[in-house]
Length: 511
Image 1: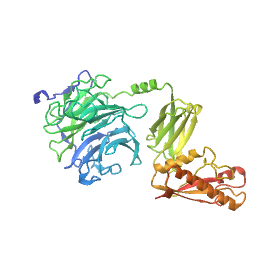
Image 2: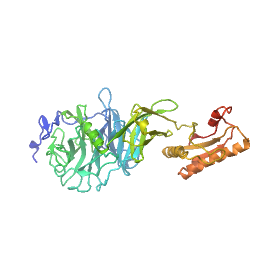
Image 3: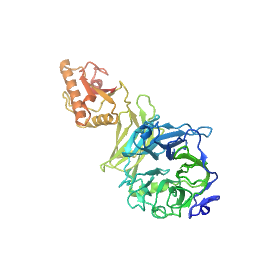
Image 4: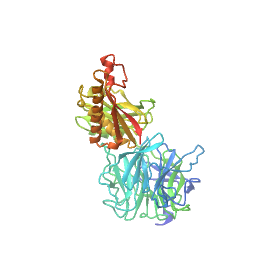
């Protein structure tokens, strides 16, 4: 294809679409320090456009050194318009492949492609922690190359991979987020987009219609050029003829990973032209007229599939400091149907879940280095639409947590039915925080024979310990002792306060 027919002068318009992008400059340097002699790839801009994430291959500062196939690095946008020297996100990187895909929500939950599949992470107080696995039905990459991205609303995932129904090698596929939290089977975008050669690094603009991707099968300036096409209906099979972005974007080198932020005047891409190594991060100055996709359509679809919805709202706070907990995982189970909905607390420590109506609801809020908090609501309580408070006990050295709902038959060490529920939260906490041990303490009031009270408190500690062991907690993580009535936390003068002294509690110790 002749180069003169690919030159983009002024406005590039996708057929039958209002999506428009104008390229004003040739490739520009993104600034000192971001590019190296190693290979930079997979550019992603954070939702607030203040951070730039990318994958760096075979760099000596990667977790696996120069043999490392890819680590995630991050740079922050500065007040003067420059980008900071990038840092390696070592908390999420391994000696294997770590490839940034995108953001699963605006609260900094991210998706990474690894040698072990798609893994999500969330950030709390500046630290990253592994989150729920991401399930994509019938997902299979049959080739060595893999690229992917998430839409601005985190409802659509695009893949550049060799998979079922490929037209050649790497093709562009789409997967959609389902109401159950899983992702649909990848669907090939069809022959208008895909060729017998390679299509890689798909990126969907904020209107969820305008697609940017790189191909070496549609002709162009070099080995891989960036193209633009517009989705014409909801089948994801009907696309406008791909348009080459022209010589200001594309060169005789290899261009890929074109990213178009919503607010910034620059688009970002990877290019091998005049690079420090193989692939470098570059910028081109652009103007765009791309409308942001409406969220209303998705809400309507959910309401059609779920006849009646309850709205559950809550807030998570540290029980000691009273500070809100950001990024806490929320899980609500509807009874008797057993339907489970999940979410996370936002920057205000709050969450909102739209969940099918039921007779009752079990809500759990869990976070790293915290004891899980739980709340049971009946249908009437849930309908009040109030903000429910969840106070989470911090898992810190020396903190003692009382198991107030672990009850025993009077004078015996047998658990009262229903006590297992709080013990299950202890099990969950132990599994969620593998770097802590606990010391169980058994206590009674001071009524009766002190030797019998001591024996009873020891037996109750042993009952709790056996339950935890049976539930999968390692024996070397649990110690304990009975103290009888020697350590009251309330007066023994009357029956009401004596109840507070009949308890089992545990103290946190770090390994």
